[in-house]
Each structure stands twice: as C-alpha cells, then as structure tokens.
Picture 1 (cartoon, rainbow, N blue to C red):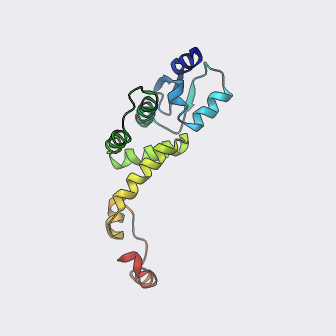
Picture 2: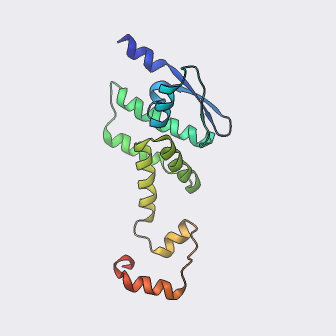
Picture 3: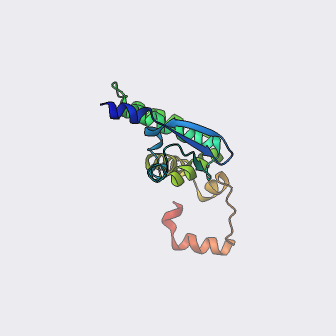
Length: 160
C-alpha cells in the first residue's frame, strides 16, 4: 500500500518546446508511452524535454491525462457517459489547436487522446462534400476540371 502512495505522489518535470515547465505526478506522466519509456531510461530527477510540443498544447495533454487518471483512481468513479461528455467538451478547440493536440498525442503515444482527437476531426468531415472539406481545412484543389471529372466517373459512390 505504501508503494502505491509513494508512486502516486512522485513528481516528474516536463519542459515544453517553448520552455514552459510542468511538474506532474508520475502516474499522470505514465499515460504517455513515450514519457514512460524516458522515465525508465533516465534518472528520477531529470527534467524531461518535450521538444515537439509547446506549452499551451502540453498543458492540454496534461489536463486530459489527469482527468483520465483521476477517473480511474477515484473511489467514486464517474460513469463512462460522464467521462465521454467531458471528453466531447474537451476537444471543442480551435482547429489549429486540435491539430497540434493530435500531433502531440501521436508523438507522446497517448492512444486514447489520439483516438479522441482523430475521431473529432473525422466527425467534422462527416456529411461534407469534398469542396466543403477543402474549404474547412484550407486544402487547395490541385486537380484540373478534366481530372476531377475522370475521378468522379471512376468513383461515383464517393460523391453521393
């Protein structure tokens, strides 16, 4: 029992790409497979640099991980529905922040956060035409009208 208390209160220090410093519980940090591997390889007092993630995004990652660790460890576990509702609200972000969060979740290897953020983007595209998707994500259509027509005739189901 004392081992659990000791490990749950142990702190890990992370440094974002823009120099922000975050001191978090080891258990929260271990949600990231990338950080978990680094913790196993480094001295306990080492500050772990997270060079690919800026502070604003790392703060969101930490918020997500804390919420999920606390939900798992709470004596009064929130319902799956309540956690899903929190997740749905959590990802209501500006598009650039959401994309940075996807990149961070991928880099830090936090599968649940990666899945959640990717699903959010997929839901944004649901029931949209290719033109609407291009506009939404600022994608330039580099097909000529002839090429686009050829693709439409080869794959009509994709344009229904």
